[in-house]
Length: 502
Image 1: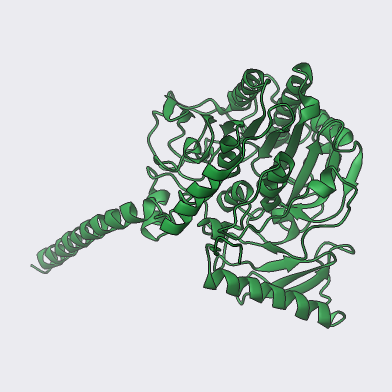
Image 2 (image 1 turned 30 degrees about the horizontal axis):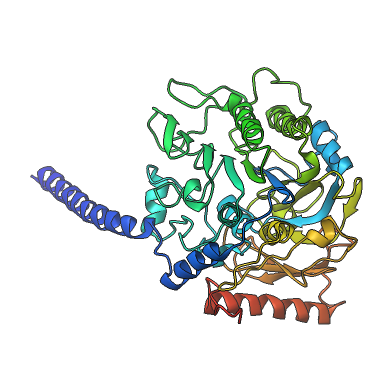
């Protein structure tokens, strides 16, 4: 009898657990639906529409074109131009020799979704409605849990993306590659100014790995499961119905070159946002094993070949002299990449987590063989492109970026920023570090295994020696700037302001 009572008690507990779980699932689904599509600000949406409608048309005979080549998790030390001795990148190195190489350039976050939002909007990620977290697809368990928790992270419709501005001014716009800023209608690339799109809506380790063309799935991932990470990085994807990641870079390259060929006669903006070298690493089998840095190096060398094909296409089409090319990465490297002697990696506010390469090539406009040590950040891309195109910035919202045009095409060697702020994948979503031209300050977080508070001089070492006692005024100045920024983001997280710019 005792055994039967125990079984009955256990069965009752199981039934109760299932019932509670079912109710939680229904409530969670409702919450999931409610947080999936972020509600735009009515004022922000109206101001956006008015701004885009009032933009002038550019002169197609004189307006420059733009290509942004964006790698995923490429480290500061993974290119020959930045000191790599194990990975061969002759095409990117050539671009650096023919243009300008930046040594103190940063992603705006240490993980990809907030970094991508900042790149495209010119705003730190919280202002663009993006939390510290990455976007997860709705079909995955991780995506469901995150959305129930309120971490949906799709780009709000009231944000202004650089492609929308350029398209409104008469540019041809196209995106190839990884989006990672939303997956449902209203939050895809063509909803934010890109006339054409080809690629994956999220990271290559997420399921389902559908390949999209414009607003439709061109190749469906028929596999079922949570995440798809493969068996080992060096093995090919298993099973039928999946995207062959080994040939994805080549496919992106063909699409990018086709876009250039189709739009050679008009100003254009191409955003080539590679899926690689994010894990898992699937080298093109035609070149697998050729790098001295293993599968990761194979993948990076394939990205270099892709970049060479894009540069060659610009030269062949006779449009290189009117096209600015920017080559950079969304954050620091994961475990397989190189931070190039910097401290830290992806996910951290140490230098290796956010300092990334930036190579700028524009024959005849950007001086060849030049190095810029002034600090800049990917929030500067939107203001830079708009200034070069002769277009005004939005005035209803805070734009954190500053134009780098004086550093690119002018004689200035001074940063347009007094401060730059670092955002972690952990913590409270507010900035946890700040730097100026000489010093960097990490705030005390109190969390085990994380920052204990630190002041360092970036021109002397790589965040090794605490200098707060030697330079107390510098610590006080940077700590004050960091707390002021944190307060600003608490008080007005989206950075709205009146149309007069106040």
